Length: 108
Image 1 (cartoon, rainbow, N blue to C red):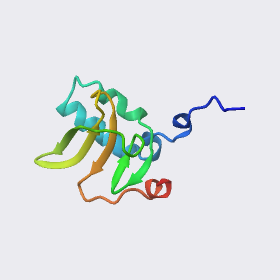
Image 2 (cartoon, helix red, strand yellow):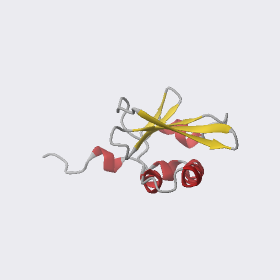
Image 3 (cartoon, one colour):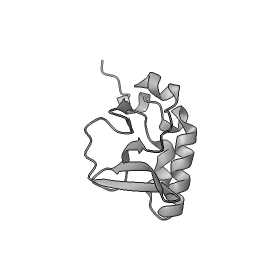
């Protein structure tokens, strides 16, 4: 018998694994893209692990033809990969030099 549960439903949410990171991204997005519907989706993004220094919020290899740069002052601190529909973030690149929390590293 096949399970009716989707593998996506079994994943942790990025907000559960790294709430501070999600809070910062949401705050910066609200400042720079206040009417973008992506802002409201950030807290529900799934966590697919870390690959090649990117925090994945979609399966590895998901097309991401658009990138949103988020800045604090004049420094770019995050890059967000956005899917072709421009409605979902597929990866996050953390550029501000911080160490990713050990919880993230254990999940990858």
